[in-house]
Amino acid sequence: MLVLLGPDFDGSDQGYQTLARATGLLPYDLRTRVKPGSFGLIKAFGQAAQAEELAARLVAAGFPIVCVERQVANDPDRRHVPVHQLELGPSSFHLKLRDREMDVPYGALTCIVEGEVQPGRTGGTPAPGVASSGALRAVTPGSGEMQVFREAHLTAAIGYLAADLHFATVLWIARIDARIFDFGPHRSGNLAVDLANLTNELAGRAQVRVDRNVRVSSVASFAEQPPPMRAGSPQPQSLRGKVEAVDARFDPYSRMVGEAERVGRRRL
Image 1 (cartoon, rainbow, N blue to C red):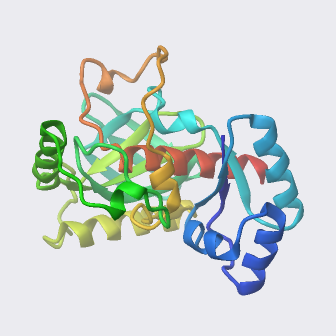
Image 2: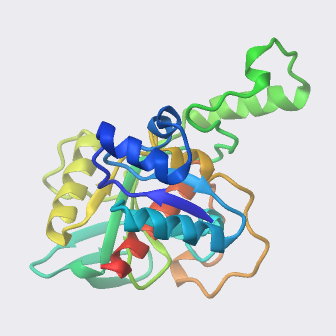
């Protein structure tokens, strides 16, 4: 289980010092792990009781803390449903999916996670501030390593901008894929600007946060793990029969942040 510090952390010197005393970690180490404005990993535990004990202590000290199961990162129930169009209304927004449409109250949205998706990107990204001994010496790559290197360069070229909409009552995630999404007559021609304008407007109406911190948050590094071996629950029809090319960094990160926001909302 992961103990995460929320984005409301003020990042002050006193805050880091207090956090260091409460966790037993060095202030320098904490500054590389957690930053104001994004979720950051405090500690990972194998036992839920240990995580909950630390979380309770930090909450009592005034820190915005949530605990999230690490299995959430690759939970098969948290699949992506492509969104083709979105219309904003007075009290709800209208989602147009591949095979159905639905109206969603703004209050059902918990957060939006925006960033670049690179289908086929593999895991293993080092955590911020952590260097392996292998990074400090010259090595001769084998054929397998060279193949991974080539694939990484090939997949990087087909990355695309996306925004994941996370909801309070369902686990599946509505994904706005900038390559196929219809931005309507007001699009500027710049996909990054159009996507940011849309997510900012939606987040403002729903009063939720847009997370764009996958490049800087330590959660992204620690969210990478092999998928759990268990059967998933029934999926929306939009997902059946479709095999996703996953991004082993952005996709797990989005799921972790979505769950962290959901847990935090339940505490309010």
